[in-house]
Amino acid sequence: MGAQRGRDLLLKLDVAQNGSFSTVAGLRARRLSLNATSVDVTTAESAGRWRELLEGAGTRTASLSGAGLFKDAASDAEVRSVFFDGAIRPWQVVIPDFGVISGLFQVTALEYAGNHDGEVTYEIALESAGELTFAAV
Image 1 (tube, rainbow, N blue to C red):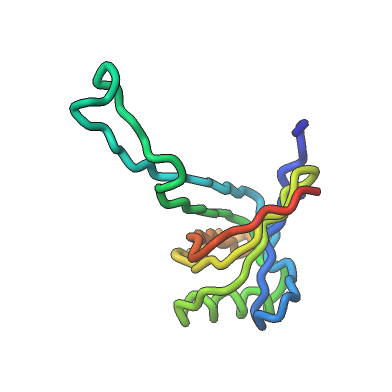
Image 2 (tube, one colour):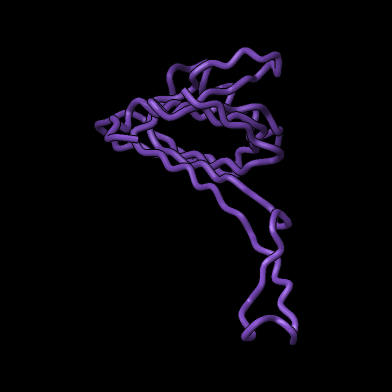
């Protein structure tokens, strides 16, 4: 993947859970982190006492965080409602010229800030809550 504009990475939400995703925010800064834990199966008989891992046995997680401006008042209300309800909803992360990561996420943090002479900004954090899929572009 070559260099891409950060502004092209989009965060979309399917509030109605009907497969219809809409962009909810203008993220100025964003981060997607994919993680996997390992399962250590090392024994006294492991070759050279080197650690051995069990293939495919760990848990995988994704964390998403971003900061910026909400697209509009309706988007702000949708995300706020999902947060206060503790709801798990389908989200998509669109990575330009790479693909789309889709799956269930829960909003784990939602912060608002603003200067007296500027716009209201927000920071959001989401954690995966189930299997994620990847579709290449």
